[in-house]
Length: 110
Length: 173
Image: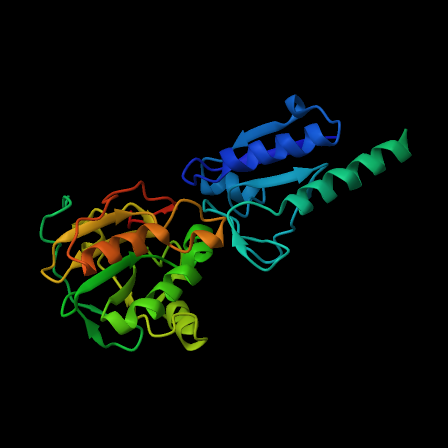
């Protein structure tokens, strides 16, 4: 399973998102040291990486909360929590669901 | 940079309907630099509007100011600001456009949100975050409310300054 966190340093959200992602992986028996953390520094890179804002978390290439029509760029990303609140970081349940889905797919392939 | 206790910069800015607003004329004025696209500003927004509603009967004015470069961040355009106001998201809080960014620079605003509380004499009495955690609505903009209670009671706020938290202001390049 490939777990990626992409961030832009101009937004302060990624340390909390990374901590929450690590905690979720530990809880699920996954190794958080495998997380690939990548910095997006330019608009060109943001477009190339389809980076809709910081932080972006992808599990096996799938965004934990698909950004829909959000433009790609160097900005803080807006997430919608399951209770309707807006947040700079994704809902814990969305992260865990994405990890669980990828975990199940990995198990079925092996 | 304006220090706590110093006179805050004067300004006159238009709201989304072109009506000009200035700080002052109230026992306390809350100035919130905010915007449309930042999740921190959006996460704290309802708490700011609730604060404005709760302190209105004590004469407190709340002014929201969007200083972001709308060319690079189209979601912060005047049109997008107006749409939010028309949807009722600001209740009675005027949403002002700082097109030149001069007001944000004069206040040395860092982030959206970044909150400033002025007393009746226009002196800066609080500057910083709305409260301790954008992710906890029960915090209820406590930093700002505590400073307002102090100012309205003629006391110095216990915590006159906190670290603003949010997206950096999008300055023109």
